[in-house]
Length: 309
Image (cartoon, rainbow, N blue to C red; front, side, top):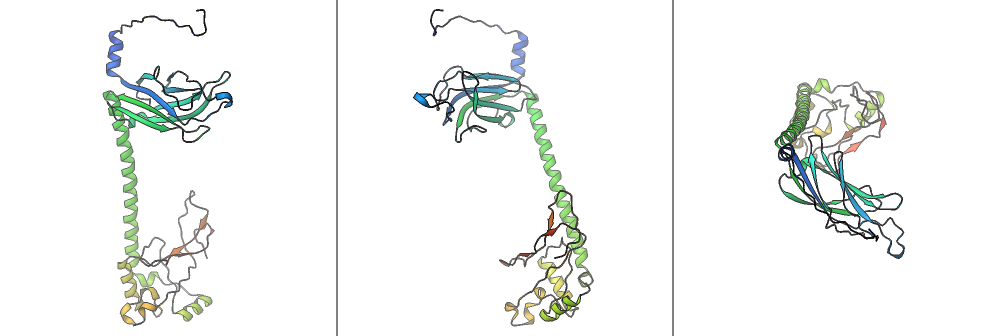
């Protein structure tokens, strides 16, 4: 060919064997058409219209294809050489695309995108506009059309993986509910004898505090959440103790009940279960249910099974 822009024209005839036809019919196939890219970053000089020269690499498993290169264009459209067909095996999970900038020495990446094949609606052409990631710029996108034709085995494997995922989530939810039931049973057992379970010897400082504000030490498991039923149980226990906690006072006992105040002193916790992966500090919170802005907490202290504040 004498010139730089010479072309070679030829005819091609391919006759598939029965084996190849059977593989095509029984295998999972993925058709990909790369349409365009938009807002690509320019990684060339920019001088005299020298812009990025983009092309797209399309990859499924170990097989990859590429579009032609379009010179000096940050918003390229591909009309030819942009349709690819891949045979998808059970191990092929991702469709990967990478927009490249063609250079004389070494091509550089303008961004990548991955699409999970199993999430594609089968047997329908789908148009996807994906934002490129891990590139030198922001806001760049690539548009493609995909058609996924899975075989029966791929369907079964996909359904099996989905069932495994749902089973794992169900087991986690069952474990959470079982723990809640166990905690509720422990709370109910504790509340059956509130008076005994809330006793604690007072130090001199605590006696002065109790005498000054009419309160008393109140020892409660960290896993107790005060509900209305529990409040009523504590109110009943109040009458048997000379220094009841003001929070649980009967509103009918005093016309000044609405203006009463509660003073809480958070002192210590005992027997906490500290898992290795938990935070390195411990603190305690306290609040009155359904009362806005009532939540308080201690300062954090180094993690301990028996912290004191």
